[in-house]
Length: 308
Image: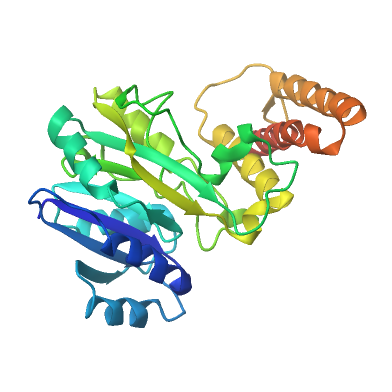
């Protein structure tokens, strides 16, 4: 098998129809074999029934597998172990791929002999985006676009996003699997579920061993934004948890601390709060929200160091 497309899902059976339908319309002009592996991460809805029914009529090879331990990283690792492809492509159940997506990823691997490929992710929202979500915040909704030209990525500043990423299967033999201590758990609706960073960690590890990355703009997908992702609480929780994770994974020993929290964190927190108050006063609530996210990030860092 040349390619395995791994889709991890949890209680989103109603998302799968559109996701699978887009895969069924792929325009392929070279002879490679591919499969779709649906990883059910302990769903309680009709995910299994729908997938098995769809597999009897679709024009591609669709397999269902069950991962009982909750967590996106665990589900992805399960998919890696169950997959048969030399190349592994990861998308989410709320992703709709464009017609040339699969062919372009395969061509990129073959042409550039790279270890990882990332494509464009454009967001699609059924509701109008709130004014406080400014373009520089689209990345928190999964948006990624490094331009119209294919080019190498360094794996640090530029690397694939989880909604549209591909690796050689052999990569996991070099750097291991996704860190199961990181990443979203469940539906991502609660604070203790909404963690990220596993993709960043994975690709930084690959870059550390000299992995070769390539960006392919023709590998375009569309990310369907869900209603809870348009709430301020989603963004604030995401940033707070990111700060907490950063602190918990910091191995540095600091001499100047208070309650286990490095003193410089207090300085950064106070500065971020000052900037937020200033922007709120002069620019209004919509323009200042991005700075409020920074405040929540440093609060998360402080809490993470306190808990270590």
